[in-house]
Image (cartoon, rainbow, N blue to C red):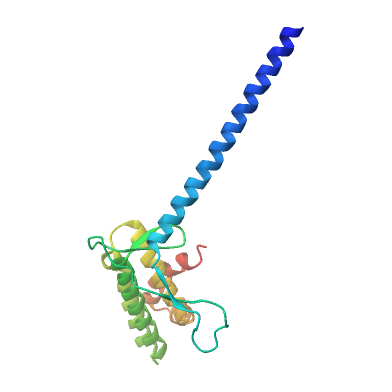
Length: 191
């Protein structure tokens, strides 16, 4: 019986020491990971410099004011990427192409809104169909780029109230309006 008691006590002590070592290892790894995350964030964000306690008018007294200073670039120039909400990096060139697509889309739909005759509106629907079909060549041939471009197109359409204009053109049985509705409506109502 004494043998089993000593064995259980030895096993208990061994397990306790092992658990304590694992706890110490866990805490040290968490601290290391936190330190690495902070270092990466500090590297990404511009450095802040102190301006002093006396801030601009309306600032609370005793609260230290800060100003953003330009971080010196020590790296070789490369394509800069912008992180979106889901962790997908998109470079500045892609964003520029999407902005141009949005500008052109808004231009077409605003001209459609200003048009007075149904024939003019149908012509603008034809232009919109051509623009929609050229999205792949404008923003990139990858499916992700095309889908993103289509979403930009539809968002621009919704922004200027183009859906109401499309409905009017579609009701007047213009072929270009029907083609545009067939392309745009599945994307708008897919979510």
